[in-house]
View (tube, rainbow, N blue to C red):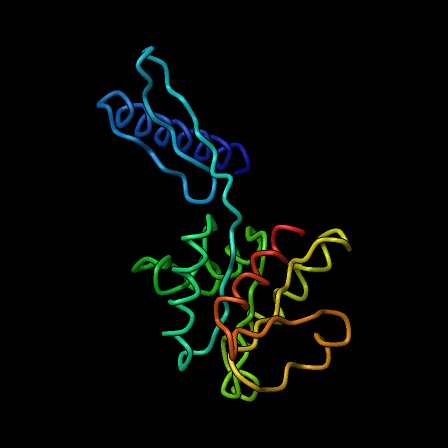
Length: 186
């Protein structure tokens, strides 16, 4: 049984390798989400360009989607690779597992707090708890979780006892600058 599973795995790797090779041989670029891009070079060889932009997971409640999208755009302009579920999840994906993987792969987890987010049950709270677990695997000096307040609201004591938050109000641009500064220092 174990041998057939290994053989099946090797067969899948061979299939994937053949698909990648065929794409590259036709001149197409192949992007591997979160890692980089394989592309054919002028020298006839294949070249890999790794992604070096900080990966930023954005956690928010549905009611704050417009603000999350605005922050995502601002982060892109400043050289970050934001992960916003509305942009990254594909039809048919196992979204709970995809979200967990995105949090694990992120360099930063930005939690967007509002009065709605602080009191609402649901996915935002699950993502926040999962990020707190993931943060325990990061070096103590690394700013993994960055709480961001969208308006005057409470941030859970479990977070504020050890992590400073950033306000995006009343001055959005100043808040985004502080957020970026925090990520550059981290």
